[in-house]
Image 1: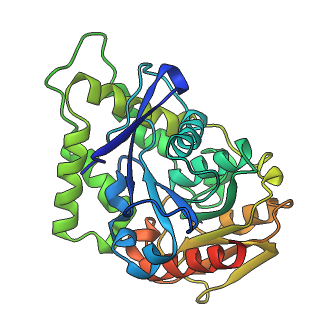
Image 2: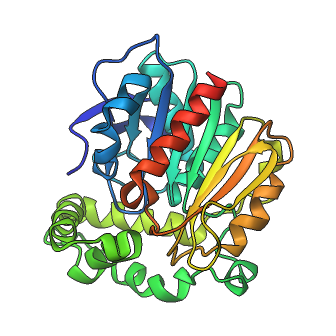
Length: 316
């Protein structure tokens, strides 16, 4: 399901941002913003919200990006930079000055943008199953997917010059959301939940426009390879891989990145190269995780919780 709590922020003429907070906000604890993957919602972080050790130590604040869940805005067009600004304004509205930020897949692109836009406010990044590049030929040559070829027909089908009040996203797209992200962990129950959730969000004319622009952001985004050198906060990156040894960690002045075992979209070569680009970070590390899938917070919640607690306890 999408978020049931919203807040209005001024960006783009007034965005209604969907969010979920793990209990009553406690100013004595650090806060971590969580930004979800493509076409999911705050429900992606259900396991993290149910982890008492995690919520006892950290305020978890899941925010749904533009084009997702309960979040909406007056303008049809937006980018990942707009979501980053929106998320910072959500922090303003909730009275939160500083926060760590965790992003799953596309969420990684948004939290990195938050750190670039407000370096004095983002205390650390936890990147899960992601890439800092756009969908470039170089990335594809290194094992990353080719979404423009795969997904452009969906985008074209979602374009319309007339209203589409009866639109409901199809089962093929809903199935891709689950299978690409959860892999073998995608049980029948889980796939059914996300199919219902995705169809609930992306229905009617507004739902079609929201879905179309969410995909446009993915297909047409700008890369961050020249910008990440300006990120100064500590970085942890987790990625999945198939053949490398368990928990291989690349350490660059303590920058951290975690990636998983079966990461169909982004593989393992790109994270190894890109973690080295965080040259201004006080602590950047990449950790490869065996036995997971693209949505690491869902398939490997224990490893993600450990990484987040380690980051927060070291730098709070």
